[in-house]
Image (cartoon, rainbow, N blue to C red; front, top):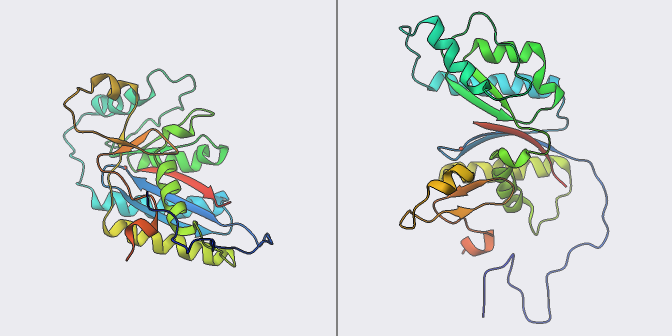
Length: 237
């Protein structure tokens, strides 16, 4: 039976691609994802060093915080610290929270690279009400940004033959703009959520790359449709 695929071709005339593979460089895709709204922010970069990632991250987080409601000033210092400390409960290696803490406004989930733990960056995050949460080693599936990167990568590159890293980055940006025009929110489907699900609950659809799911299925290819904040950095292959 006919079914949607990457492309439609005449019988005995399959799509062909160049047989030579020339390594022309790689592209880093800096990604910041808000699962609850489904909107994604990304930036192609030739390198993913701290000198590139940290300024971009500060800029994007500042814009997100400016759009959030202002935190009230009525909460006392003890309650504020308790709101921060609860996210470190059970951690084997919690980092030391600064003495003076603002109201907690944002949770930032990302992996535990050494560059994500530099004192300057962590202090900046805490000073702006952002709590960094680090996934354990081998736990990248806990980061829902992995799933959105997988979706965007498939839509931007499947069946294509980019000629340069710049072209890859441009296609990612175009795909992200199209995604944000009608984003799909992600929901976490961990063991706790699975235990609480009832037979009459709305069905959810699993996504590859992480434990994320959606309430509506995503189109799996551009041909089929044509005529959450979490952060990660991806290298296209």
